[in-house]
Length: 269
Image 1 (cartoon, rainbow, N blue to C red):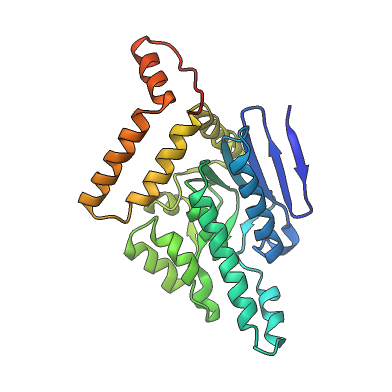
Image 2 (cartoon, rainbow, N blue to C red):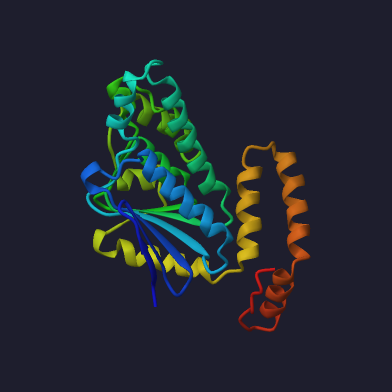
């Protein structure tokens, strides 16, 4: 039985496997990351952290656009402020940065399911997720350069997923790339036929949901911490994490289950 809560621009469902689906649902505005949209996504993610029933999060969208990024009309309107919008622009960019970091810092794996175009901060949202699967028809771009606004914040997430040359090509040209190219350069995990996208993404989510939540939490945190360390620092840190992990109840249970050729009974401890 699904537990559902539908907001005007963000739909949420939790299934029996503990998979939380957040569906961007503001098609007339191309699922833009407006202030309201970002707040709703972040609130849902924050609530998922303390909800033990939730084991995996999928972020998807209704309509042909996954997300067009920031709401430019919303931003442009604030140029009428006495400071020409400076404080508001700072507020929006900080809110966006916190949202992306919430995804990375969440102990729950977060998967992007992209069925349409993801541009600018929408592409940043995809790149910030732990995993990303897209339909063959999906496209991606960081097109800010085309309107005089370099995609500096999307650059942070994108450049941590793909090579410098590939990142700079996207950032300097602003061109759309196909799902197949996005897969080739590592922006997404896999491009999938549209009719199979939801099914295949759910298969991955369910597979992950069966793992020990404690183990996933430790592992995800360690992955993002070590990635910017030097080689020796990363090994020292990862070794300490392995020792901590080995002492957890689920590691003891998992190893025993493997030796005894049975399914583990996770306690998430």
